[in-house]
Length: 351
Image (cartoon, rainbow, N blue to C red; front, side, top):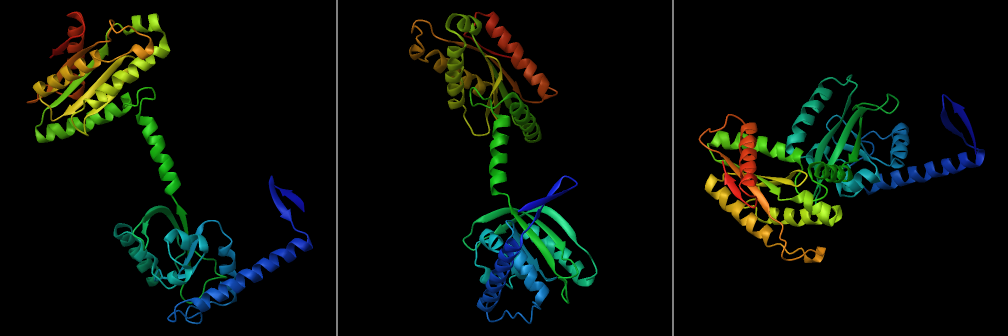
């Protein structure tokens, strides 16, 4: 097969044999379309829906597309549908022909499209180019499908009495899965698995707003591993990383509720956000963390059991509008941490 180049675009030039093959495929597809039309429900009539030669050509074309394609009339009823779209919507093509596409959508999305199709019925001269826009379809098995839907008017050669629209349905399942994975990565500290500082800042803003609105306490812990530089110097950074991972696991296990957030704040420092926790409750949580961390066994890291790893913890609480903003709360917890370290480390100090 030869190719011609024009504006850096490669266009295939087919031999007569290739053209014969394509014609054979087109005839086969047309036969399949004809068979499908006769297999449709008795209420569905090819004459009623005006499937002439041009529509047969359109059906042949969409059958070979790798995206989900539906052809709709101005009532949003499905006139044609390719195998990919039928598979996405979870029913056979015969069962979907004549169905209203909007009836398969979530009510929130369908409302907008009802208005759109009302405008089309009122003025059939409108040339539509709508989307892509995310919608949710509901299958007969109860499962939902997140998809991008684009609607465009068909070229005049394919259009007749009831102006037709071509809809492209693009499955967003893989995209959303990957987006969710990347979002988690963007908010997670790679080493410890805790939230990173960016996620902690988001959680602090959310919790501050909620606790201020509802007049609830909001406590914060800042935790620093004692003499961690010395630990790294003596045992190496690999062992230091494993030490931080074990400490992070203890901190995470000590969180009292799902909306509490533990984050690696920087280096060997951790931050904990405790919505609805008073100073006394936050202090008890800090005592528990401090005790469990001191009891950690590092013998598998070839460390002596007589040399425990300890932490110093600063505690601050926003209650009764004590602080003007969240930054003041962080500063108070930071000051409490430095006091705990100045008092000899392995201490807890409440500001």
